[in-house]
Amino acid sequence: MTDQIPAWVDGTLRPVDKLEAHLRGLRHKAISVFVLRGDAVLIQRRALGKYHTPGLWANTCCTHPHWEESPLHCASRRLHEELGIDGIPLTPRGQVEYRADVGGGMIEHELVDIFVGHAPETLVITPNPDEVMDTAWVPLDELHRQTREESERFTPWLRIYLDQHSEQILPDL
Image 1 (cartoon, rainbow, N blue to C red):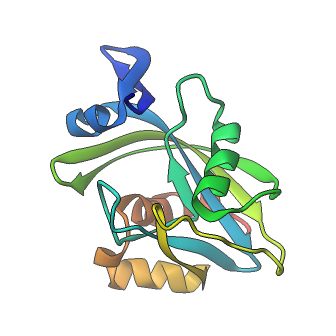
Image 2: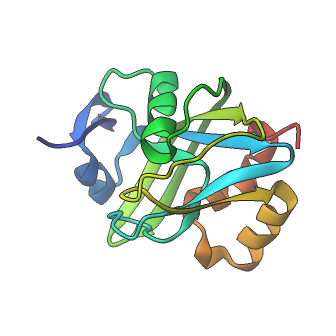
């Protein structure tokens, strides 16, 4: 069974194999979540087994919704699957579109629904080792500095979010 994601082919939204969408650079749906605790953002380091951008730091979680899955359900599902996080209310922060080379001949051309959640101090994180190799809470100003000065450590989409969409995604920080 292939991993089908919603992508536009010849102007029509249809289910497409995830790898095919990336190899062809097709515009496709995605979600990204930022979990905050005070002024810090929970970031994750992608597992080395990921088929693109392994070992790079990204926002709390991101993925592609299944065909006909709502963005909010997808965001909640993925928080649980990647980090074992449940019960955090998520607030939509609109959509962002970007196109980025993620290496290996693959392009992420995504229309992303962004969500933000606020974590209690007692939040327990249980990373799935197939997805996540490490996590960190980083103050937003420090994360901005790191993504500028050490860009090779971070996914292209996290750099784009912080450089171009920070006011939309994290206006309160």
